[in-house]
Length: 613
Image (cartoon, rainbow, N blue to C red; front, side, top):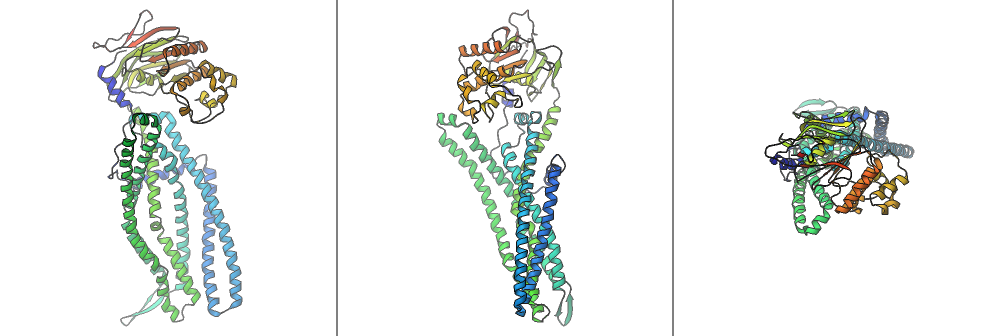
């Protein structure tokens, strides 16, 4: 193997995720984009087409039916209003008592229908959100996209928040908004017909000319609602973008808090509390600035809503008064018209009344689609790489690297060439200085690094397990953590206890069924020992140790490596580390060295100490 001296450091820097951009009040344009709405509709609409389609359609149809029934009861209540006030005007006590009985029946029916709406609506919200979360998580984890998105710096900021919270705000309010829209549409049709039939036409005399305006209450309601809505939408048109930018800033603040929590010990040891406070204050300052823009926009909208709102119940009364005074309308009909007018206003102004909710929904839907789009594009980006390292299954057992060259994302060589053969039941150690390409080579073997060329051959059906330097422990019981990543494979307590003993973790044997933050309760050395116990338990065909024992002293490392070889004698073990260290039973030790002449030495059992450079 040969390495380019300057490329290794460059590769190391490019391997890190791109730093998050500094937050500012001038964030990206998040104003309403119909392409995002259409894309989210196609994605989220899969809930009604996949495995959950039956449940989705049952809930949707049931919800639509009870909404129609609810609107019908509202119309019935409107007719009851006319009946009641006409009886009141006639001082008809018998009819008033009868209307009271009917009123109680209508109210009881409305309460029952309301319960059905709540249960159906919330079930639909829960199952739809669960589907969206499951779909986004599956796409994010599939083909190791979560790693490639981070490695290439193309992962949207705060993916955990987008999956956990934005999925909720992109689905739950949409159900409520859909209910409101359906109800508004049905109500508009129903109550416009009441305004048409009850209000009738009005005769006016203007400058000596008699004019008849047909369906004048309908025209008044539509004009009043449309003009008010257009003015409100024009004034509040920027609210969507403001809400989106505010949500982005809050996501940055949450990420900063989470990062501080994860690095609490390092910050405390260095005494960085004051600096961290200033950093958090700067980030939250952006949140405050963007919130104030929303407050300012809300103030402007309030001018309109507080002007239109108080006028709504009075306008129909004023326009119905002439006909009432002429005896063309009864008191019951006037109150019915006023109630119908208000319902029509609610229907027409639905989008205005829900403008802030639409803005919140759109901001979250866009953030969800950013995740979906990123997952959709990363595969194409990887496939478009000009040269690829190929991993193939070979009849020959063990691990073979044939002319493997590893490049950084800019195409510069990190490892110019690697040729080595590691048969079963043998061990090989690779050592090298920092930035010599050790970890990058391990990533290539794991299928995580695609830049470069060459062939990596693994025995057919062979299983590779890699123990990284940062021993990972999932959020689960210790039993499941040992079985990770094969949660479906059951191991008896004897095997689990023996694996812990081989790794020097016998004191944890009685805690197999305890769940918690094992990544915090275990020290770095204990987490590395747990990785060894996991290898002993799973007995893979190929084991790769990537600086996996750095937190332990030399004697302990030698002891653990000896036990690993003893317990998994058939495995091919590749030990990669910074300092030369042989696994017991190693057939050779190879060093990654840089040479100006770029000398390439193939793997050769006759070479006393082959050089990988």
